[in-house]
Image (cartoon, rainbow, N blue to C red; front, side, top):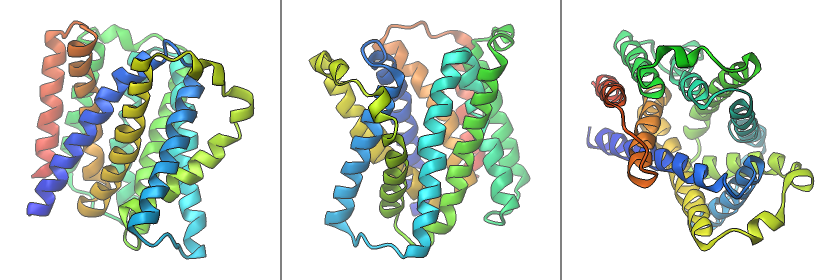
Length: 289
């Protein structure tokens, strides 16, 4: 029971980190292209994770698991990041924020379909409640704001959401044999190697050279906390309390993002967003019961 409470607390920390990272990436996008942000964060993050693995654990992995870890990195790192980035290019941030958070719904059904977890009606209620909270939070009570945007962008956001759910679910059998750090390091490395193919065409050293000290500090925060720490804790959560319950905490990311934007960027916090955020945290409470 104490282990579960610790997992819940740590996953709330992950949500807070990823929420703050939304503001951090928004700041970086003023000086760096979206692809450059992806490449610098994930390639550097994978190197740091492997250094940690090298000093803390045995780095060996059976050959039969290498392809599974590679698939994990391809789906959850390379594919997800590009689907997410180009979804933002073709449709509104509100649409992406809502559609991307359908992954707990997909995750709950996939986990049951693959036989990893039993289908629990109470958890389904928590998933649906959380999604309603995200919808209210992202639209700020303006229901019509979800109707705009390009169809291609909306489809990309849905595919990104599904890929994140699949990424989380596919990690479950690997976490039964390997530590969260090992699964995180290998999958991140596999995804980063695939991302590396885009370096010759997209990476711009000049952008990094022009980055301010504040920008570099934000890059360091984004790599160490949102990549190394958060991904490790996410996998730890999947290993300890299951995939579908872990994914409920993704709903908290936009809530923490709105709070961070209020304090850091002085963005307006609407009453409807407070209602949506309250519903989100209620859904997390329901999932824990």
